[in-house]
Image (cartoon, rainbow, N blue to C red; front, side, top):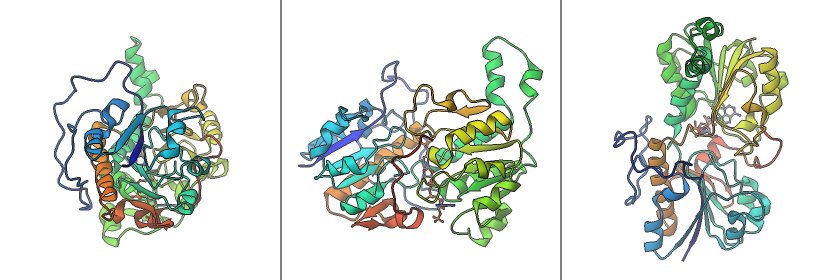
Length: 393
Ligand code: NDP
């Protein structure tokens, strides 16, 4: 028997929905690059329902309990007295979502001698101390591609809403006003602007593809260059480093994983090299940006806007300065947890569990760490290290 400890975000304050806005989800055939969608043997949930909060249980309870395994689901994840800490010592498998991360620090891993598998129900395993996972022989896997398109759509939305000054304009209407000049004094067309992405992986390339019809100049940097035909078709300009990219861009979107190479990348010095009045969108991970440098840049006008959905830690404190800084379009960490994405990462989590329980190989594209080393997609996109601690981002 295996014990699975699953950390999910809280149910809606208004109660678990009985009726949804839409009756179903579109059926997708494959991911944009041809990768197969999750392929569990079956699922016990209705796609399009809330699976990522506690009552949704990622649709796993029936499957696990019918196999004789136990499932503990909680949202109580922080502090030594948390349910997570109390349940961890005899746990075999931890499941956590980046939106509500159970930080698997070295200290927690040391207190979990039975822990063999850490699944990220989503993408981005920086809440796991990868060094400690490697040292303890823990397999780390995530559901690659499950929400990359969800995030790419969100990035495009955030770019447009900052550049067009959408959120303050909406607020004027809600408060009974019709203040056109107030709304448009910070409103521009995106057309003609230079937009650059830091990383052109699944999300970054998805953003580039979605923005190509907007008549913008597209730029990117990545550790590996895209194929020449993709660069040509989208009219992309490649820059060898982030430092080369940012001075030429009006809009910069960050789509790289958080790992030692990217932590703290956007500090005062880098932001000072951006165009005055540039927009910065970060749906990757908060700690890629220096928290206070972002606030200073918005206050001075060096940045015209900042938007994203990633914070550190999560949830952030009530007085986190990104809640109140000027010209921001922040949301809680939601871009990768649409109902559409939840159906995919719940299915992908079950696929990983089925493989692990039946001693079948987990897909290479899901693996981050295995057998005491970075593995699969992790060996390609991550560097070993620990990004679970450090300064608030
Ligand atoms: P991918 O693995 O497809 O892409 C990541 C890209 O980042 C790869 O092309 C990788 O390069 C590149 N990269 C890694 N390090 C650097 C670096 N130092 N400089 C430039 N590029 C770098 O992942 P996704 O696009 O699907 O996701 C990216 C990140 O977005 C995730 O790691 C996660 O942190 C975040 N995310 C956020 C979500 C949200 O809800 N807000 C949901 C999903 C993801 P290469 O592979 O060529 O080495």
